[in-house]
Image (cartoon, rainbow, N blue to C red):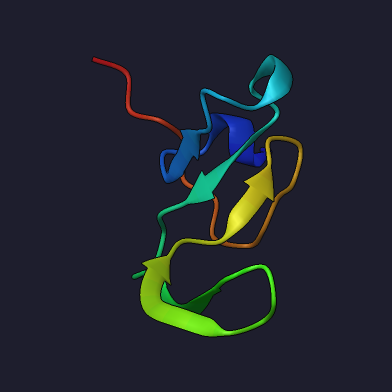
Length: 65
């Protein structure tokens, strides 16, 4: 019952071997986007990044059509 098989997991297509993604179980949270020197540029909303092998207590299996 890892994130890989959870209905809330969205694979990051750019990650090697699709081993990372985001969890969309809850709403995104605010984060600051900074330049390379630590200066805040903008506030953005992000979902938590998770590994496909991670797990949590809110797992829901994918629906099969």
